[in-house]
Length: 438
Ligand code: PMP
Image (cartoon, rainbow, N blue to C red; front, top):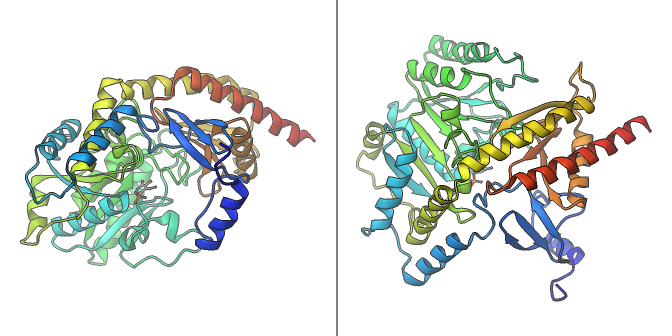
């Protein structure tokens, strides 16, 4: 490790070159130099258990994915204007994971790009309708159209007034939303219907609902039963299409299902995917129906220079193969269940644990100052994430009040690693108890 530059130097040099809005994790930043499975190594040789990076889905630098990518890089890398058998085979493997009505695939390079394509598909599917329903605290990307449809961004610090065709659905959060409790699903569907009725009264046609099945940046919020399915159906009945943004939660992470929208019983017309798809290699995709794809085609070529290139497609296929071969969706379900089982007694011991939620290995702990008022405790969450980092375990915080601990490890995370995480979390939450009574 002696040849690595000093972390303080890397930090100050970075500030000299980049925008101050390019953020860094932790009060004590880390310089990572190597990754393997669920472990990241810093420049000083410390090992960190990674419970936050959901992009290296099948584990950092998975040997099969690396070997396939390296082999393909040395063989050929060109674009989709040539015939390519791997492209067909990979598309078939992806389609086998999707509901049968989603049969046409577009390959792009990022989640933002996938959502841009999805919005264009929705415009075509609705003959030019413009009105788009999005979720409060939702996030869909950093590009022009997507950032303007990401409430998390446009309503946050440094935000802006969204275009007039953007309509925000209150976040379907059964813990701290406008309607509460496990049976609040129909009340949130009614919120969607109210927006649709207002649009109809104004003579404006809905284009789409763009929704995450579990709202990540909103604080790992799992909506109440029936909400997502009802919201999608309501928008469809009003003439729009339903877009499920699976960029964060797809590819078996939720354990019980391959896609989070399936876990919610919802039927999308368009699905976008990215992040874990290439285990860190930039590949993303959109899936839709033949009918929507044909309306979109309309004579104009669809082409993305890097979308569907040979290397990306080979890597994407390797990732799917590893998920299957290593039973990783099942692992996500098993290890997620372990988390809930072990957190239960802790939630009784520490009243500042307001809510423990999530699905599979997409988990959140909502910290509160008071059980009754549910006042969010962002300072405690920041403290806990920092102390976990000191103990060599990486988690993060999120949500509009920054009070939700976010746990979303590579899905190779083991039961033993989950035990280690929960035990460390218990110790750190105990420390916050000492702080509270001090
Ligand atoms: N949608 C969701 C739900 C996301 O979490 C993200 C990334 N955080 C995006 C879209 C955008 O993806 P990308 O950063 O690859 O453009």
